[in-house]
Amino acid sequence: MNDKDFAWLIEHSEEVGERYAGKWVAVRDGQIVGAGDTATEACEQARENGEGPFVLEAIDRNADVIYGSPEVETA
Image (cartoon, rainbow, N blue to C red; front, side, top):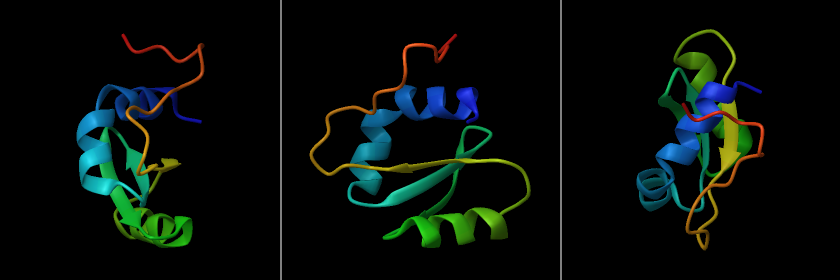
């Protein structure tokens, strides 16, 4: 997993949650590079939008924030 992109998701959880609630998102280099109703849709968009690894995350409609594992650095 790309810790920097996951940290970006945590840091921007409110705005991501508002815009992408109920969707899957793909994040690369601190940018949403794919989004869709399914993980497959988000992955396909991410691959169309460049090369390299990305973080894939489901955005829960009812969640207030996106939580990461304790070892993720946000600084």
